[in-house]
Length: 207
Image (cartoon, rainbow, N blue to C red; front, side, top):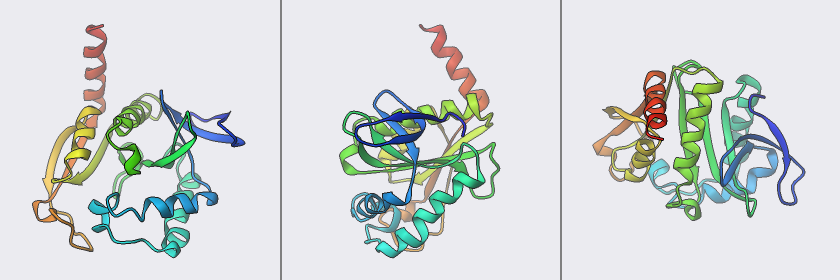
């Protein structure tokens, strides 16, 4: 597995770490994460811009969500869904995905995340997004990273911008349920290899 390492965190045994930042690490999901995902997906505020805040049944986590997450590790080396763990306390904070988007190949992965409210407004989303983008360009040889959210989801849009992504387009996706603000549409942000390299050169020049 690209970028993998084995470390002992808290009382856990060997943890398969995909990415490490100053405060967090990302690891593979396991079947033991069922309860953590169920709690995350049943917070109405977390799910507001996903399904309007509706509850998610346990059966959906067990039969759809977890199997989908786990299947990525066999199909794509270095891409998939990753549990976010706070280093100091070993707390599960949510997840990030970095995987080929629908209709796109491995050179154009989609970045996304879902975090507990306790992890909001602490810079975690930006911290990991930047690290994943850097890893994608420097280790995986990707050519473009993109992310999508609703026009009204200002918090996610700010994360994308802080991570160096640029607004690419505004469009209207088809949602299975009505979500407040969906009439205003959705936005796609991106950062290309050329943009990423240019940002790094400018950052190094000011040091």
